[in-house]
Amino acid sequence: MAKSRQQDAWVFFGELLKEKREAAGLSQSELGARVFVSGGYIGLFEQGIRKPQLDVAQRIDEILQTGGIFERTWRRLIDKSPYASYFSEVAELEAVATKICEFAPTVVPGLMQTPEYARAVTMATHPFATEEFIEEKVTARVARAAILRGTTRPEYWVVLHENAVLTPVGGPTVMAATLEHIVKLAAERVVLVTVLPRSVGAHAYMTGSLKLMEFDDQPPTAYAETAFSGTLLDDPAVVKQAQRAYDLLRVATLSPEASLALIESAAEDFRRCARTT
Image 1 (cartoon, helix red, strand yellow):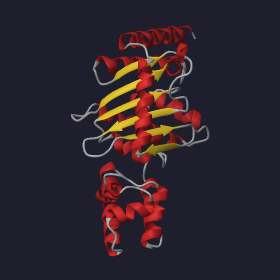
Image 2 (cartoon, helix red, strand yellow):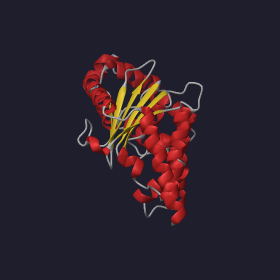
Image 3 (cartoon, rainbow, N blue to C red):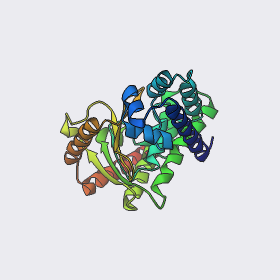
Image 4 (tube, rainbow, N blue to C red):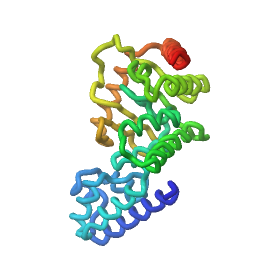
């Protein structure tokens, strides 16, 4: 399903939600209180701007006594997405964000991956997958980067742990090309990259990758991801904690100039290694 059609489907989901909520005689705030989200988020669901998590859709079905229609619709829409269920909404939010801040502890973020790097990561995590599956995942991941070239592109800040710079994902040739791609994006002022050196040791966010997103017309969100799952965080107090952690990470990094010098040096080392193997 093309993204525009999927968005239309979520708008229909929202319209149906509004119809069922009003038929039950509940305000947005009243329904929100019963399913443990704010009334404002119910409004965003009804406009198709935000997508509920599965457990929220299930609670809506229970409160509105809709026989599971929202859970079934949610599952059908998520199944149409090329992304993991826990990442599908994040990919859509990236496209409307005005600012994205990422921390990548081990792997280059998807928005900066080359197709070869994305393929290596996908094959490492799905060693028995079909070629069709691999290509679908790689294409979807690379396509996300289009937001960095659009007229409404977000501010994009990335903190790379030095491990993500020095781990030869896909081999030295692929890694060299990926690092050179990052340098090119920085030179074009598409992204501001800094590196957290390994010598820092313990740091403010030790549990996986972190993405912060800001928007023109909705509250900021945080997305935390580990090896097998991810969580979109909406609670303002939790998002504030995530923002503080990111601030602490950023002050521990090398300067942008020193970071790019380290990335360029690593790319040269990988190129040299590729020539000798």
